[in-house]
Length: 402
Image (cartoon, rainbow, N blue to C red):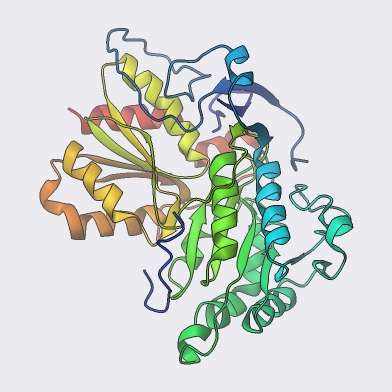
């Protein structure tokens, strides 16, 4: 079972590049507290549909894809419960124990423990050279991390906020993504660039950036987005072990999501999507925070008699077209739900990929629900208007399935 932080208030539910090596072997909020905890199965495997009730209202605690069980049953399951930021830390710590070449650098990552406490306690355990506090100079320490990767280290560069990494765009694009190719294969760049992003709770335009669309066109870089504690830890470990540069996107509103994860070691594939909920009527592709908006809408859709298939694409580059294609061939309808901007976003690239590869299997045009192409407002009510809400997802599915 997972525990999802659900913000109070209307409409605010939780809301292959040529130069890449093959990676198939790897199978304190900035906003004041307005949160409550709901219990749910965050990974949701199989779900039996029971159409009947035709409620017109969204079920606000509807993140589960299985019938909710009592909280007492979760305590009897094997494993241990972690918040998402703790899962990231556990994966990072395990890799630092396993490989002395793994190091961390960024602003306040050391004795302060990171702005969202992902690196808390690591400086004390590993020392200041492996957990390096840097000046406020993203271009400099990102370039330093890339250089460290060229010499054989495996650095994890933390951006205190993903929006700040725009200052390091030259290093990420011209160096990080291309050096393996431009050096004729002499250098590998096994670096992980990670940090919080997405629309938070009134963090303002500069702190609400979604940079997936900025980085997706850079050759040689892989991109993944975590959405649960389980896949956060698994993707972190896989990214650190990868010989390719990987950007790991974390959502600022998901850090306090709780889930029971296995005690034994595991990793998640950097190139595979996750089947969140099997279905027959329509394929809904999403990632990161929007996974929970989609699953909230899915409960209402089931009550209305629809059977949506929900896929968390996780790998933003490259797309897992095998999983996506099999779903399209089954449902023949596609809805993409993202928090990224509509123009040039992940949804636009995904639409193009599906159209090119699976056009003959589509019975309806692909619909993409994205954030509006405006700076994110500070006012909470206006902020909600810029981001896709569950009610919009319900309406879009009803129209596509007519």
